[in-house]
Image 1 (cartoon, rainbow, N blue to C red):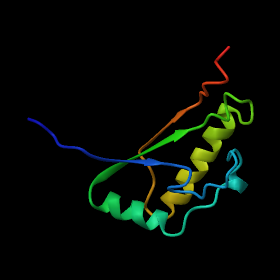
Image 2 (cartoon, rainbow, N blue to C red):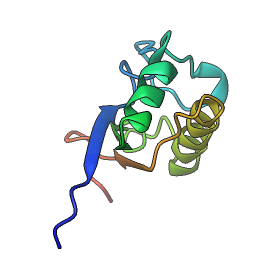
Image 3 (cartoon, rainbow, N blue to C red):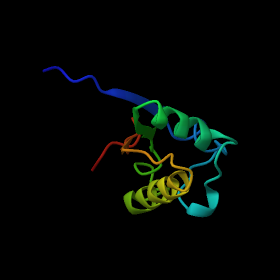
Length: 102
């Protein structure tokens, strides 16, 4: 039996939280876009799984650590869960073409 799964992929910075023009690596820097949590809650009620995807090149550039990015992502999920809008998965790319991994 084939099961259909609905998934909504969302970018993090500039889609869910405000893009400040700088890397977000602390909870204090994370500011939700107005009503983003409401929109995600609507999608969840419609049966969508929520997957966050994000480019986090600040890791490769040494501006943020993996731990800091993951802490911000956990905090984002806490904020969203408070509105029944938590995400199911979060994936990020820690690379930057000018800063190759060592």
